[in-house]
Length: 377
Ligand code: SF4
Image (tube, rainbow, N blue to C red; front, side, top):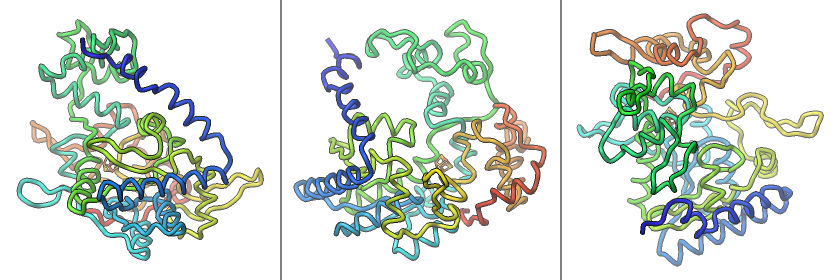
């Protein structure tokens, strides 16, 4: 009989692995720094044994710090990035430190995908990668994903999932009411459906696939600057698989997996890492805690992941402040529906109840306006 997920998890000792990982997360900075060095060297050895090259996938401050850390311990890995997605100040640092720029995936006509095309043809990346992925499945029903759709609506997993009820597969009630309507007939429920598409695949087309293609072409596997302390789906994956993972399809090293934000900022200071202007500077508060004076985390300014959790002025307000024309295009005109009506992020935000039409106080915007004009299109 086929092993279910609970049996598999027990066989792999997942609970014990996660427990050990959490103990390491609680160690001090010096311990974690040494631990990161050992893991990084281990990964280089694995690469040598498997005849693979290695590189650093660079984005914001975390992975820039990783690049400096690896160089500081004598691991000279080429650095690559989908720089065009990043803030201008990050792109400038990338140039200074010799990061190679990778273009997004190519469409069938040989041209690279752009963000507007992703929104029009793939769907809006909104709420979170996990939630968007579930909505995407509901919007693309097949016989094969029937059990998963049932689990998304009810939380019941079926036999492969160990016949569990009430699992985290179920969409939160709030989102079920707005997005669960695709299964009304199958599940005898009465939820709503949006009049736009949602997807978790934006990153895939703009970042992940281009990086994978580069890696394949160069027979190379990546060092990544991920930390479990940042939470989300990746935290679970790091806790289960640890810093270094060498599977049949995926191989990667995350030497900072057990780091906290404090550890990362301390290391950036120790290594004199150039801090992109979007973050401001790294300072120590009266309580001794390190912080960046401007952005805490960066990413694409037009991304909808996490927007429901942001206070105003949120990222769309900031875009309005620094580039009203671009804001208007993305909020109101980027897509056209089957009735010929133009729409954009505004329709999505209205639907999930995020305010965006009124202008928040300008002073607040100025204080938070970390982005320069972007040149991503
Ligand atoms: S971070 Fe958001 S906008 Fe940027 S590539 Fe990923 S999903 Fe798309």
